[in-house]
Length: 292
Image 1: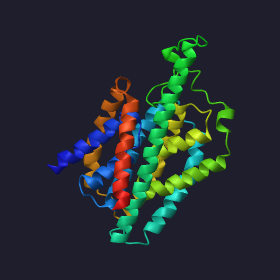
Image 2: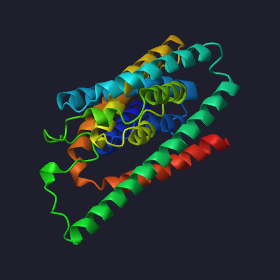
Image 3: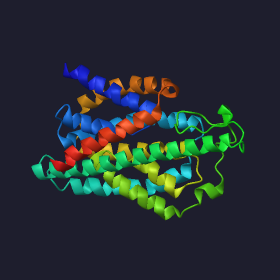
């Protein structure tokens, strides 16, 4: 019975990822801990390789659409991979099954989930404000109705027209690359410790660092750099013995069709409602983890 439940959990998380682009780690790790009673260090290690598998397919699609700004990905990876390796080295010095480390991982996970919930809420409010402003602009008669073909979707699953996928030099040079490397360093450590942080948090910070870069390209950069990060972190956890390979297979069996279903119904789903609901759910999970 548990086998089917794990596959169903993978399908649920995959569907949400397909609908919203929210990182699977922010959903899968709390599910494994709360719903199935998986030990935190095993939940984190297994979920990291799960994320590497699911994000690889998304990265290939984005690469085919020429949406990935590789310079941003390079700077993020320049910080995230060393941050990941240092964190794995530190974890290797401790007994990950001990009560103290278990509490540390839970609290760190709670903080990461709280940041993710805040990032989701920020994007919901920002999108609502932008939509209201655009409607007011059109109602005033100053603007022409938008052509759907020229509208930039906030989802990375929607392709852009040829004039929208061009990245000019000014868009990438808005801020110093050092800030991007430091962001990668912080997220690399957070992801390795908690499996959370490479999704909504990364997107929100990149929006601040590269305000002129189209949002689909920011999402694409966030997904692309997360593949080597989660792969290295997952293999690092595997070397520590904190990956449940059988569980990983069951989750992957459910998530791959789930992502397809989510992407298929993307345009028919009220994305803001889902993101707002996820924000509340993650904030609740974060409070449970921090207060234990």
